[in-house]
Image (cartoon, rainbow, N blue to C red; front, side, top):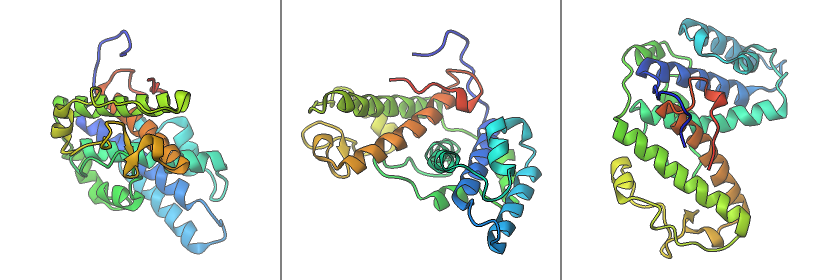
Length: 237
């Protein structure tokens, strides 16, 4: 359910700027190791130079500033984990910008493929921001609705651990709009790792839920439902 205020989706350049910030955070989170390593130090300096060149300071949230600029090797495990998982939300922003196809619902994305699509550490990132365009409202809505349905089913399973045929939850129009064949197993339940949810491995279910949470947040933010601050978007089911 949307918040009680006028819905104002972020404009395309803002989506691109937010994507660049998330790409920087993911890069730092995935590379925050040995501060004595010259290669790590060089990468960190390049990352700082890159993000400063993009004029995206207004988009960087305080906790993201800390992740990007705090001394190398200083990030907590929680910061590194959150930043790394954030690439799943970034994948949805990259899709919304027309830079990537819609990701498989039960698979983690390749973080390097996603950040390469945003021209991480490259000057071409400025061109992506300047030429940014977002997909249609129909596509963004289909993304939002599909991720909501998947998220609801995963949380329902956590509560009752039982089978549910959710074929009536999933509109074929959403799948067609997103270019997806199906997210369902042959018995009508959600497919995870190629099998029905009730037969999937615990690790696969946990991964799918983490993936879905981050992507759902990005989809809600793209719709403008809860204001402009990305990290403040509530991911409800």
